[in-house]
Length: 430
Image (cartoon, rainbow, N blue to C red):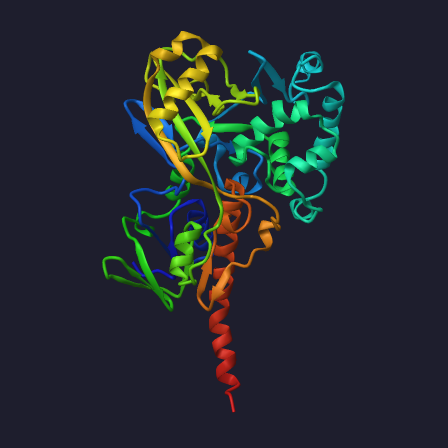
């Protein structure tokens, strides 16, 4: 096919970029080195189970997701607005009382935090919802931990709720992430559902890809190098276009840009274990958090409680998530089962391990400073752009937003190019 723009990478940013280009009358060609679309957002099918590649969820409030995705077709299944937190040997429910006001008495007497902490949660919510996103990312910045401490939250609620809940989002156990990023995520939890597509997170990129013609995506095509407005594949084939957009992860983008070797961007890792069981140990759409302040486990979730498509009939799917990806999986599994037996009893012995996803580069670090992602420079040279959430704040929101921005910028540049050339011909240089 004759393409106007070559997009390297079929993750969410690359697919969003391609769709923005087509919406503006241009023909993109998306090339992808792997065997499928989605980048990190993929779902594997194994023995009748759906296994998302690590702990992934969709926040339905994300503006770019609402604009880009068809939520009805994704058949979203929301989690309970809150969590079950294990504290001192018991599970305690933490609820968003703005959406579950009937849980207010339970929350008032919960050991997760003090009564003053629960009043401060209202003030935190009001603060996080104030202003637009650009204003949010321009506020004075510190770490999330220092931010919570400055607002007066007690060590009890920080250790028992904020750390286990939000470290599962950022893969940063000590909440050393930007306070701006924390406020953005808190806003997302406050204004929308946390959900899974009924048939797995891979349905999100699949839906985007389905809106492109089949010839607009080439899988198994690895870009070796970029030469002006052409891309040379590893096979030696040369693809020409009017512009190129790099929509790959950070190290691959640096390689294609031929940037000098430097310290790689810091990342945060996670390991996700999937187990098959006869039944889930907890009913309902809950996230189960470790609020004990010790142990390797961060969280458990039960995807087949939300959607039966995640497990074959008569079985349940259990996901156990830990921070880091450097420990031997067999050794780590032994520790996980040992930690879970006091929580859930001897049934843990009967679970069958399905898979382990070790993701040392699961998320770019989000430590300060984190500028407004919508202000990141995307144009790298004449005819060359890059996009991706690693350039700002990693999330589905900013991946889609970055891709959309790149597509709009490229379209504007290409559609203005003939006029520019005509003007140059009328005013020759002397």
